[in-house]
Length: 485
Image (cartoon, helix red, strand yellow):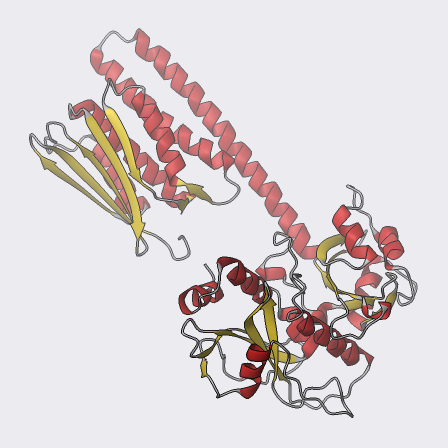
């Protein structure tokens, strides 16, 4: 869970839907800060209504910051900040502008954030204090910022600048206004293009002037995707739509993040219903992502083939065991089958995974299913959950637990074997318990394998606690890397 969501859950009484809305706003509000040439801070009422708490802050990439210190976590009691209190209480923006410069804030401004008819937060705008002459570029930026900030308090039910398709981009390729911006009028015609926006289309091969052209027509001409023009791209190119789409050209790939503006804050009439599109050259990034997807697909196919090959080896061992004349030979071959079956089950799960983490519970269920086939009536039970783990931990852990389970089935004489797994404080703990005759204390090959896997492969702790006549208790503790939760 993100830092913003945690603060909102712990310090406010907002509903889950309102929290999700605020998190979505702050996830993507870098564009708004860039357009406003301002730092933005989101304040929310605390659960006891004693004041407002700052839960998020973003700095612009288009102007110097006006807040040297991060305000997140700061508390503002009632009466300390008149603009914030007024915006929350009255549900309308607190704005002070000069008649000579109506687009430039003269002090800190506050904009209410409405959700389901209520004000659930206030966005404070701290404009950059650097002197800057307003050209057409800055004027477009500031006009657009006013529209977007007005939209959050308009009670329209819309998500002003939130792109709903969260899979479109990750934190590494969030669009910023300085990468390039164009604006469409209500007819879908380009009425403004920043220098970087023009350069982006030059890289696509456009030789004519972009301003004054129907944007949909331009995009259709520039598109060179083998799969054709997507519906997302068509919607973005026509204007009046908030979304994201990639434009694949012959020489470059441009990610276009479109935000549809409504009438609020822009004045009435059709000319106010514009669309701003932030452009980002993602040519190298998309090529890298494509290579990673190809690599992932290859790895999954390799794991699938390894699983099939291991199953074939297992079948051969089974045939060999049937032909064996001595019980000792059959036992050795059965142990080998169990180990190979466990490895095959692990590769089966890895072949289905889309990343380097796998569900250890899924693997353990597969291992237990294999063990049940040779359990001779012994009850096998899995308790708890280990969740998602890195493959480099999940693989030796599953092998270790498989060895312990088979060891209990073969040597304990138990009628019940329990496998319990849990995790807390960056440590994963696994137990294998049985109610059999207890371990003799002699370390066979299986226990030697477990000890080696736990201590060397996972840098963990393995302990065996035999209580003769009362069963055996085996414990594995493995430290988890940061970020594996």
